Length: 443
Length: 161
Image 1 (cartoon, rainbow over the protein chains, first blue to last red):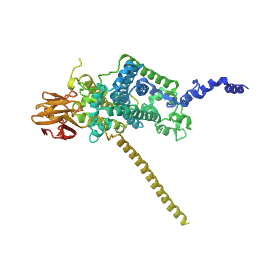
Image 2 (image 1 turned 90 degrees about the vertical axis):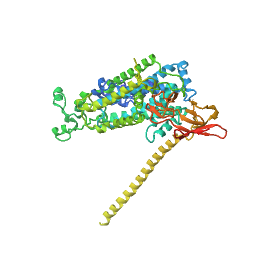
Image 3 (image 1 turned 45 degrees about the vertical axis):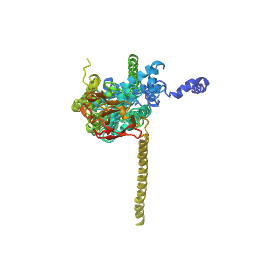
Image 4 (image 1 turned 180 degrees about the vertical axis):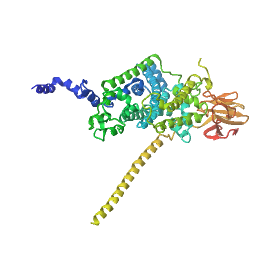
């Protein structure tokens, strides 16, 4: 009787809004563990996440939310970029005027441009810091080698996106930065001249270059970046989430851990059907089961897994929301406080002195001032190759998931040396170089 | 009894060979078309005509350049040098990173990274890896001087006018 009433009330017109709502959101706000699982599982936007997440991965001091921050900055860039496209014309005669229009007539124009510019700078910085985090915590070790490689490419695409966007205002800064930047490309052996010509569509920076950079900036590179980000995320899930410290992941029970946690179930539970307990403990699979394995698989994991993991709803989503709010707030504050620079319109006859590339390329430019080939092509190529090879050179599974692990002292020192050298070069190029690229004191 | 196994062994490899050949062929076909389409994209984005400035242009009559003049044509990115009755065009695009060098007392100086060149465009200091290019100058039938930036000549090659 009561079920019949329920069905009738569901079929009545009065229940239409409710029915529509329920057809969209399959789950009510969860109040049980089952609900929390299925909310993550059945929602399109949430199902990228695992149902449960390791406590270690949630620690703010482990990831600093840098990867997420980069993603959210990219999101801001996509939104503001699309809005800016409504008013921008990639033409050498109009582009600069459109910049002035953004400043003068377009509602929120200057604000959107500020957001776009500062988020772009922020993204370059955050992606770099994210890479440092992953290195210093040894998170690129097997099975995550290839995700590191994708990450390196993501860094390069981010730089290239920033670089292509730099030309679009068609002011002095843009024009000469791109002149310098594409000349550096010209120094690559064999293909350098052709790459430069393909990039510029002409022998000098002009209308063709502006159009090409525009297409790369608004269509080609964002698609490439999105595809790479998608694979990057997908692999995080397939590799069992973020890298975690060895002991926890392998589950070889250290005496200390066993003493500390008396309720810890024997580690044999997962493969109880297997051989005798003692031997199995040692031979436990390294990868713990993914969450889908938990739901579909024949084995139910209990014990330490429960202790280590939290439900994504709400823990992970709250954390992500926090990072999102921080990222957006930071960009808003910076955009309200500082205007994106816009210099004089392009004057192809008179380069500003000094003519500087965007700050993240000033390390490169500083190197280039010593030797065009080695500074601009040789050393950067070697550095990128080394970065790509890192996870294949350093495969030992020690110090994973820990900041500045003692076992990784050598690797971390080498990496930090490279990172600091590059940062120092950027700082020198930014603050200590004046007219004719001569050494000046900023004080 | 003897026929049975013989037939299956004969059938099996033959079947396999055909399958392997077909999959090999289709693999080659698919990857081949992939490479061809990638290449054709490269060909597509390499412009056959450029819309910027032509690389061959007239700069005026010899009389426009008095003896001893070093006149920098910034839009053309060449410096016309006349010594007596000899005339030449030296590139003012810095060989380092493509900035425009300015004519200085001692030759040329680049504002971007501080490269210096002497009167003939040879590097005297700074990061520039090679000397400024000299371009071919010819006299057109109508008496105009024509500079051809696609035609580099050796430093010190002058046109007698």
